[in-house]
Length: 315
Ligand code: ATP
Ligand code: MG
Image (cartoon, rainbow, N blue to C red; front, side, top):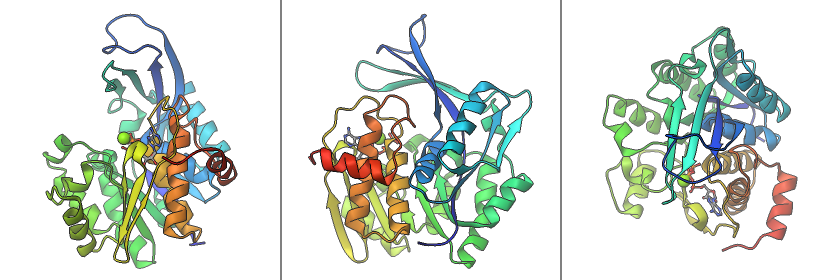
């Protein structure tokens, strides 16, 4: 196993979901939640579940929403020493409702919540100074304090042999503002790139999949794993290409699939598993997640994933 913790930086939220489909929150309606959530939190929870040392740099309020997240992360083995608890601030939240067309309507309380106050505290600096791997979530890059911490961590991390993974987790619109430069800086330091769908071509501007992959590998990205939803995933490196079909499941709630997938591929590789096996585990983790309501409710350790793979048909 490679030494050092996997560390990520970013938002911890609760998610509260509408139990009916429809367009948003303009009338009273039944809801379910709060569920622990936030893409970086989902990712790091899955790392902890798989038994790999893990830590998150984040912030919550001193309220029940913060407490339920901290208890879940601790239970699953994540070091939360660098999660600041802000007295009087509210923990971030996301209300989500599925539209009839499968899209999602959100009401976010993020920027004005504790999640908007993530900062380079002494505890954060201590955790980052000892990281063996940094997982960067693109959704956090437009936050100046988060981008700053990442840029300050990268040189030392790389100098001591540490590695970087990057899940862009963005839409095209986010790339238009001033944050474009930081995305390219991060990509230049990335060992493992984890795009889904059109994110592969966002940076190169190259629509053709093979050409986009070739371009990224030429700039020094060592491994690319393209997530393809229910269809599984493809891995690309200088050694070639590996495609792996997904597992046949009934999708209940897709939130969190990409994060659990990325965490599982990364941990499996750090534990020395070959690419094909790591892809199978990652597909299983993503598929397992979508069968449960709540973004973190489907996170699973290796024993559960082995059982799931033995019982579930590939597509
Ligand atoms: P997210 O919506 O969480 O950002 P993503 O877009 O990053 O996710 P997806 O490709 O949607 O990533 O899902 C990640 C992985 O989870 C897929 O590669 C696949 O292995 C698994 N997965 C997702 N949806 C399904 C599904 N409906 N059935 C089976 N497996 C799935
Ligand atoms: Mg998706």
